[in-house]
Image (cartoon, rainbow, N blue to C red; front, top):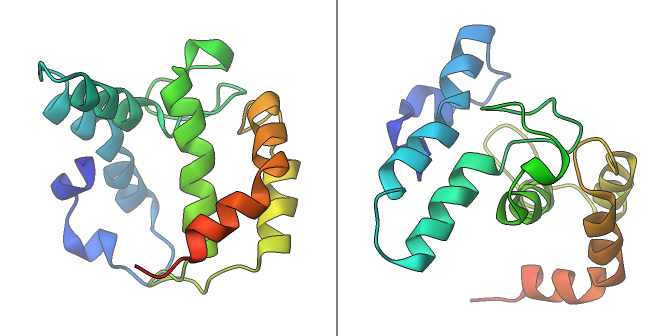
Length: 138
């Protein structure tokens, strides 16, 4: 949601972002939260939490607030894992889609750093189902 406040030249840049561009890109989490937070609808309020927390990292090195562990809402912890999985498995303007084996290796290497260990275990246990959903044609 917050990416609507990010300039297209940054969103669609095929190269690595320079530091100023990266700082602008990182504002999308807080922008998304600000857009959604006042809703009276529970699902939209959940979206606000996801927008705010999906780039926080289990070890506290994420953004926008540097939250760690269970200080990150469960919606954000789940979304962080889903976001990385989805982004790596799909082609983007700046990269090709990764094979599933490479994605799993990365996610497992980030267990306890980027991702909550318990959620990585659940992800691995349900990988076949997740891949089936990911690869279904619309």
